[in-house]
Length: 461
Image: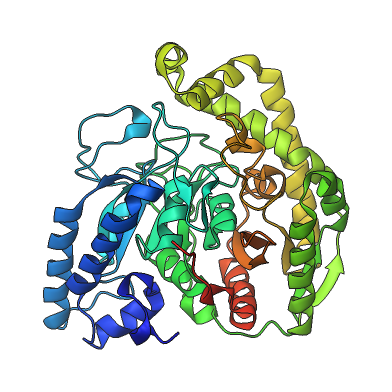
């Protein structure tokens, strides 16, 4: 559907920025449309923890004035976006930290969004909070979960409650909600996006990244937030390329590796519909000009367990001071993380780091032969709330088996819709690349997207 025929809240960032730059669309008009959409359906979806409508309208007015004066900042100028609660937003409480007062400073990634001219709508719900909140609901079927832990971001982007969201991924927390909600979720290379101002879950596994409707929008958001930050000791001082320039629908000659042995290892836990749709997508990559080869990653079967051991230990270390309080008073999932940290030892952590080194070496060897890896991004389509409990959401349905290895190795990985189940629920293909080679990941995802056009279907809500 042409941009002019869509409801404004269903414009992509890519479409909206063209209209705004041409002065055919006002940032204020766009922001008001999205706020009306939030008012209409957020009560069903529970995507937002804190809506900052007044400040968002003020930011939209300021963006409009700048653009009318010829001071256009770029592709996010005047675009309404939202942020996972885990990232600090000036003027809003950080519930994950247990804060009831407004924080005084933006996380670096949020600060960069503001510098790019984005309009910050508010903070989005997430699992892992120390308090119980109504769980966000999947806009494709509100009886289904969105996946965690960027729960609100998955629902909000899919349903038009923001044009893009900034999420966080420790074991798949961007890609899992993206896969279950039919959107694009990109975890960039570890160190590519600053985590200063991000409440830590696991310091060596946490990644910030964009969640959007289409690949172009992920490229625009990554462009805004990527880059070195001296406030983050894990930030890498590496050049940031022009991600939009990588979006050429051409993968001729690209070599795509498929870890078939690992997929077979996970087959018993993976819904057959997911395997069928992902296999079809991989064959389509081949028809589009890629060369598909099977690759072997023997230690990958240990990666999810290693990821979990590192996560539980580092999470406990980061939240040691509030552990006693959380055990007594926190929500079930938050209490579970404390117990898991207590039950795992330094020996477990060291062994997990040894596995990590082996996994990284195996990936490095495979990436000497291929440009990308292609595999599923979920174990099954979004399950119902009745099928999940507070302890299931994180690992059983997060599909960490397919996603966690790329956190462990710090590699860029993207979730891209590749079809729908019989129940009309989204299924996704996952593409992963070499360190700091987000361009190749984006290019392949864009090529597949432009061929398959799954983005043309929107949820029924």
